[in-house]
Image 1 (cartoon, rainbow, N blue to C red):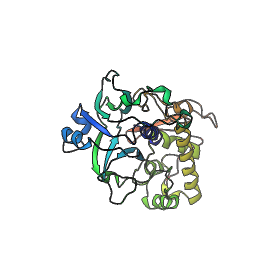
Image 2: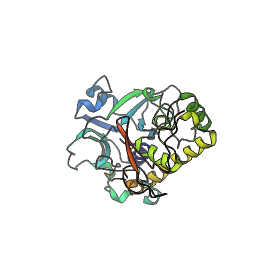
Image 3: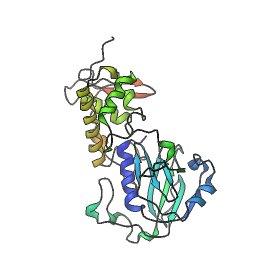
Image 4: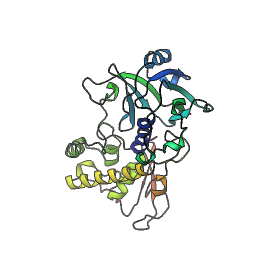
Length: 310
């Protein structure tokens, strides 16, 4: 499932190619892709028509497009969801679920100003009037839905994700509050990193990478972390996510792509995740994989010591 860097790359693409445009028509081609919009696909399409799209926003793994009337379109990519900007005459993708067309052109900045992971203008047709936004989803675990926003929230935060914590790249993320929450939670560190009510955007891949960089075992009790140790861990979480964001995120298959259909390539830089039996890049000890909460945890048994029973 996409984590913060992958979703942020998509958000940047939406900001560049979709924000500021006015929705003309919406075609819902599969009901599961709007199942979180309880009024159904026809209502979803009718209510979006005519709205001007605000600046694309993100919190953790969720992204949304603010509209007028205190409403926002929330996108959840699930395991295989893709938001693609395509020419209107491009052939439909096999798993196309929702099509959104606009009344006006996208505002296209200079290629030199493009954010990391976002293709330059030359990669899309010069006539952007003919582009549309498509939601493609092979497994139909993701979807789009329309929600009221949190009253007074300047970013148009959908009310259904108000409980999601800020992410570590958010300027308003509170490091001290996160440390205190870790100490109170009485859990283990990887469980805490994946708890979206404590810190959002961190998934299995980047948790393993940050823990390897911090030399922390995934089952280390959070109550044993000192404030400096928590600060060090947060620093590594931010570093690994920033590095991944700079190269478009991590793609292990064709299911995660940016709005131009391109994959990220941070998988080439992973130090722990997916490297079972390969030598640790610090000490050459073979990386191990253990089953953990219906997932896998990758770690170095020498650098990341198993915590002693207390």
